[in-house]
Amino acid sequence: MFILPDLPYRRDALGPVISAETLRFHHGKHHRTYVDTLNRLLDEAGDHPDSLEAVIRQTAGDPGQAKLFNNAAQAWNHAFFWQAMSAEAARPDGVLAEAIAAAFGGLPGLKTNFVNAGAEHFGSGWVWLIAGASGLKVITTHDAKGPVPMDGVTALLVCDLWEHAYYLDYQNDRKGFLEAWFDALPNWTFAAAQFAAHQKRGPAWAYPAPVPAERNAAAS
Ligand code: MN3
View (cartoon, rainbow, N blue to C red):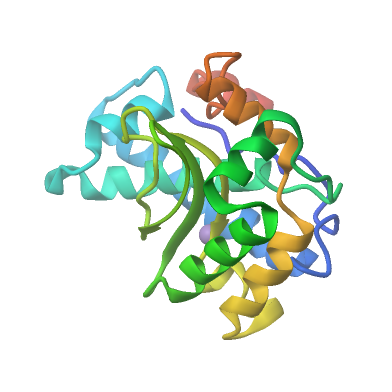
């Protein structure tokens, strides 16, 4: 079974952009429900996958597996989202800063691209900074979809566009949330490590490997 990874910081660490109350619901209820449902579906199917990434790749685009895909992908997307944020307010540097300059003219250009793409995305989903064959790109994905099944693509950053991500703090102002988020919360150290992985200079982030059900039950 898959665990719900702990937040890599305290619940109040991302305020005021993301309040402790939002994180309490978002991590403790929304994310937990995706993980619990994922484990139930795998258990019912008698499936014992080696990794969450494998589940996502095997179910992506298969209408008969939509429920399993949605819960697996949402479990992954949220765990990645927590890692992709930090209260440290660092700036991109080195080869990542160079790649941002090449693709967007610099950090302000990336911000405009990222914020507008996320604000204009219709309905629920995610806005990502990804590294692909032709450099860095901003993309949005609908609902649970994300870059895991995309060949040759590595996610560097993501922001959640579902209303539960910002409604308690920003109500309907998704653009205001994205602007404040981009200025304060991207974890550029994490993004740089992901970019290094894309360039074969280290491992990419992966969801924690599944644990035996009995061991997890004993620990809780
Ligand atoms: Mn969410």
